[in-house]
Length: 179
Image (tube, rainbow, N blue to C red; front, side):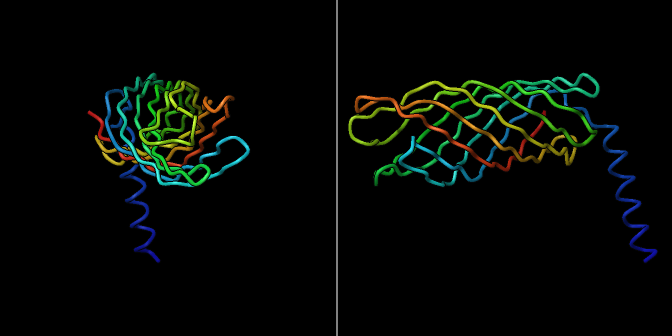
């Protein structure tokens, strides 16, 4: 029992010492992957694997961290039996609270979504929309950030005579290198 207490005490002291050395300021680049739920109007819901890359900058203002991030993701979905890829580019603004090695944040931004394959007959996708979500980042080392994010995208698909509302929700795991 004593050796477990000693081990966890050393681990906590090490984490606290590292937290004092870590600042969220600076550029970072990384990759993300996770599960996306794609809802195409009232007719279809499809879960798929999504993956992508991101680049961002954070400014550490003490307990508050603000930042901007661009990311690009791709995912495959099926609507009415037709399978397509959708590529999404986002510009997000984020603000969060600095808990030392942990950063809890919310984000809001603009998106552009495009298909790279055939979509249901008469439809075309190339639309702008909005994005919002929450995230948690952990600064494992001075340069390595591991995180998780839940994000919602909303936009419309036009074609076939009427627009259809598209909602995409995703849970993503992220790894970033901070410069």
